[in-house]
Image (cartoon, rainbow, N blue to C red; front, top):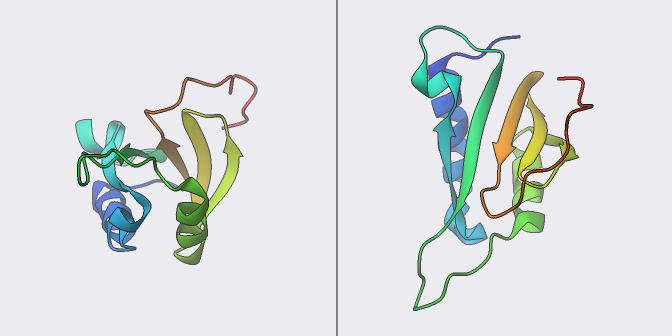
Length: 110
């Protein structure tokens, strides 16, 4: 199943509206849906850490975020650190965490 840019934007908006600042992060669409024309095989989203909050930079609350993401239909399949392989409504989603090192996902079937 393929993704359109509009569907990617809608998913990012849904994540933002969780509200994502509660988890010390914000979503950003990236990859082919943002930079190329036409449909794509997956949706790439960066979850980036909020900037300074009262002089501090709180870490992303991934545990709480995953609970909230599951409620809107995002299912975590594999967490490789930097890349988190997920599905949403039967479609592939790659969520990136730039605060983590790259993981070994060379054996991933996607």
